[in-house]
Amino acid sequence: MFVYLDNAATTKPCEAAVSAAISAMTENFGNPSSLHRCGLDAQLAVDRARKIIADSLGTDSGNIFFTSGATESNNLAIRGAAAAHGKKRRKIVASSVEHASVDETLSALETNGFEVVRVSPRADGRFYSEDFLSACDEQTFLLTMMYVNNETGYILPVRETFSAVKRRFPDIITHSDCVQAYMKLPVRASSLNADLLSVSGHKVHAPKGIGALYIKKGVRILPIMTGGKQEKGIRSGTENVPMICAFGAAVEKLHSSIGERAEKVSAVRSLLLSEISQIGGVTVNSPEDGSPYIVNISAAGKRSEIMLHYLEGRGVYVSSGSACSKGQQSGVLGQFGIIGKAADSALRISMTAETTAEEINYFAGSLKDGIEKVRG
Image 1 (cartoon, one colour):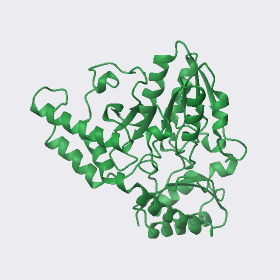
Image 2 (image 1 turned 135 degrees about the vertical axis):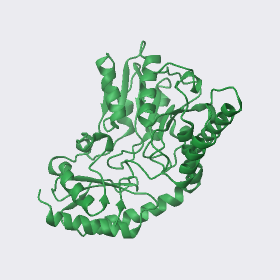
Image 3 (image 1 turned 180 degrees about the horizontal axis):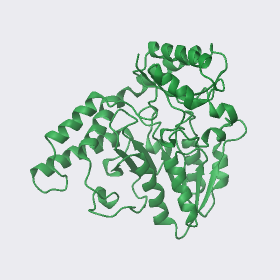
């Protein structure tokens, strides 16, 4: 049996996305910058996809800039804001559980003289907006906070925090990495009070290699690449038309069913939690009110990598954490109080609306067998 439960790492592209990509590669293959009809047709296809992404975020097309993925979007947002505003103000506030594409970018800026304050959860494992507000001051130019943590599914208080900070410090730029929230939870730029939002295609049933950055009108960031002035000069380089079209097609296909799909995933998550509660030694690391799409567990002190490969041998695919960490602990679990053997044995199960009860039952049975058979 083939059971894929690593959807937080990447999802299978939907048929609409695949069809759109093939069409753009075989029929509408012009360069959008070309001045002839083939170029115009390609540009119109890009414009259509841009509008779809914009509509899904409740904004205008002019605020959407295509990138190669969320890592580039996060880099562009943070480095671009630092380049535009870092001469006068040098402080950035962030959560302590950010994705590597944010955290390592912040670390790089620290080596160049920027001050980065990382706000951690309190003893109860939760973040509070007032802690971020207290960390901000007149020297702060950027606040960055992910919406859904990619390892545990914890939902951070983005809306409350951004709104509180904007009331006291209206000039602070607010940025959210929305990769694990987009197309799973309602993500509207205005309701989040976000100036910058990063999203990714391959987490929402589009191909890899495409993402977007929302930039609120009037918010100034500088490009981190120079070239042919595509994307209004914010992101130079010939547009990846097939992937852009595929991204737009996936969002168009799935956006109207966000609520329905979340209900399906919640039901599957409930079944998963029920099944693993009957397996001795398994603890759940994800909060009850987290994203239903991600469940993090610790499996009876059995090392994650060994258990992962045992499950793979049974046709079950999960992860030991963020795919970008290549199996290395990121430190995020420790921020949530998950340390020692619990961290060493952590597994991330991530689902979609296509995940079935049969697959969950098979996973639970395989996990139970693994705990009984696998040595530390």
